[in-house]
Length: 230
Image (cartoon, rainbow, N blue to C red; front, side):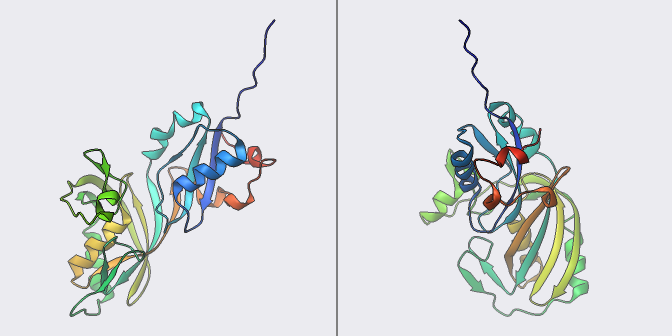
């Protein structure tokens, strides 16, 4: 006698993650809603960040995560000048920059151009990047600051949308593995005034756009498959 075992629904959910929860919080939330254990995400978003998070549902979809995660990302970011942060964003310990000066829009635009193209980037100490099997943020929470090897990243485009000292709003198109926090940190160092990431929103991963994403609060056990794509 044959037994038909119904396979779990498989595909991708485009979530518009709010600021606050971690990417793993979204995985746990979907596991509760879908009753499916095999769920992953393509490209981590920090708790501070909001925006597009691609969730892979079931085994067939999770096998494609690496391909999706390697696609180009687009972000909207607000950089705060005049200080530094131990996490390179506003959630860390902020230290006001000494002898800080107002940066002209001409100097800012000139500095931003130097970030275009392929380059080496030092990841933040507070990040999920692993060194010798340990995540950097775990070491940082223990008070350890270690030397990090740079990663090769590419910044395809930076547009300055708005600038009113001490904040700049930008859109950044970049390769996978780019830390927007590190761009803020390095830009502040270059301009001699300090900077850190104040807000971040991911608007695209490859051809997938955040305006096609669903608020996770709207998903229920009854409707989540309505939003599933292949």
